[in-house]
Image 1 (cartoon, rainbow, N blue to C red):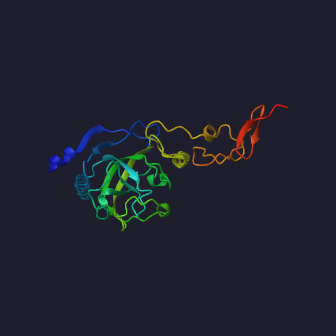
Image 2: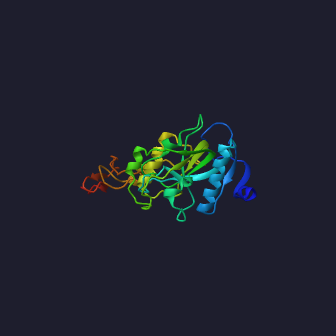
Image 3: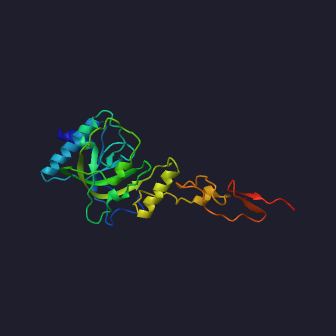
Length: 250
């Protein structure tokens, strides 16, 4: 059984935060094992073993990815293991799927880098299970979740306690809409540690080029083109349409 467990945890030596240009802590990444699972039952088995070892004083440092439950429409813990839909589990009775993240000293609190309409990216996490279950409390942003991602989550599931030693955020390759771009900008302003190259800064002028006054056109950054641009020579602002038009020849 122990041999099988070790096979499920693929040890790959000295891990680094994937391509990070801004890391969560200044020192080198700790040696970690990649937590890999093929099913919900695999995850439960692995987490139970890691928690038992932690309770015995043996803390195994692991790396995995999580995503937020923002938009699930349930009173859920904020973070859940990524890359699995958990249709094979009763999440109400599976705290092993959810995580509560206290951070080590000097590590930015990952809970401060969740926004109400976060685009579905991935958080890369390195740390260890403490062996404890978390009596987490819903934060104010949880009340704003509206999309009913999983109507079966009637109760408030428990979560397991995981000590974060290092983390970074990998945004989605293509944010779903302008609100997602605005969320990325919010994270950027907060100083989120990016995994790899940070996404380009959202510039509303790109989508709003040629507009003047208040056009009502989406600016691509979560807002509308309400920026006042000067129309070029030989043009004037059509206030009704919010665009620059040619001035008729005299």
